[in-house]
Length: 73
Image (cartoon, rainbow, N blue to C red; front, side):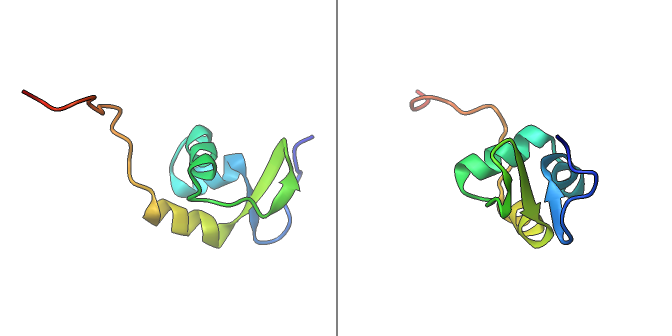
């Protein structure tokens, strides 16, 4: 069940992603990496504080996808 409107001052994963200008998968990644913390909801429908999403956006470093393994010769 999706929230019709999340509790005041909080955002669903989709709304948090729109607020931060990222994909919902990025929000979930920030949670996994400890950059963003859930403030409630349920395990399948977490909510986040708007202030925490904004802080995570400033803290998170973009992932380029080009991580090299080992040293260059």
